Length: 376
Ligand SMILES: Cc1ncc(COP(=O)(O)O)c(C=O)c1O
View 1: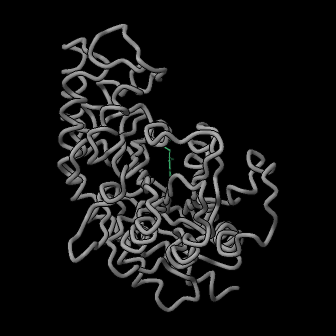
View 2 (view 1 turned 45 degrees about the horizontal axis):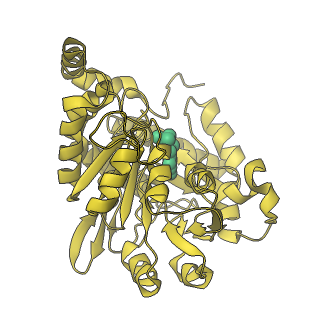
């Protein structure tokens, strides 16, 4: 049995490469004793907005808070409907539920793992107050198509870009970063994300001054400038200064890390091209950032076990579509309602991918996959 170990993700490898800068940034915060929001967070907000080519950014304490405040800022409430995907982490559906609105799940396109735009049009009703697509695994949704459908009906789009910092879509001949295409973009900086904090973090991005001002107030107990004056009920969703400082250091490397992920994905594509596994395709008019490298295998459990026995960690994102989770069982969806999502939930397997992953490790993973194919 081989002694080679390939971890699913190695956050220490990234930390080692930027350790001194991170420690200096954390020291700056401690020396300033300004621990919440403040200059470090303000600087990060300006730089992240600039990176995305968006007008405004509001830094928050998580991606889930970002989704929640985006919907609250749009005035979404009980009795409303929000269209979203069944195949994702649960947070976007939860954010819809927090407002009292109903998540309306529309099946995905199994090739891209993302909302099937051709089905969205038919799901829009008088009650639809937003569409909430997720750029899953770092693969952008076809935003050009989605914005057209949403525009026809005047429905705002709230992008969940939690897994897709820096991914791009071609819109009317120009490349646009996801999160800065719809009315509001939401990001997570959970430590394992492509741009990850040293703790929880998130952000809302928008070109709308009205949404920006509303979200800034909502994150801070509904307060505007005058302290202890609260025109409406808000939340404590503020980003801590430590996270702003860390994200400032990491943002400078994001493009380099994205390129590293893309080159690793290209090596996987090459090594796996003659296997029956379905590798992630590229969708025309989009540039993904490979938060995950997801293959599909009919005997997913068998492949996972085989790789585990050979020291290779893999992940399953996500094994049960959101409408079938206990949290949403009351909605009465049944098996067969979301054929593409159900297939992906059964067959998806995420292989190790991170910017520092060595080519020899990818070759080792792929050699084992080819052996498994032969032995099956
Ligand atoms: C697609 C998606 N949306 C939202 C979130 C929520 O982000 P956070 O964990 O920062 O609350 C995540 C995080 O895992 C996610 O993957």
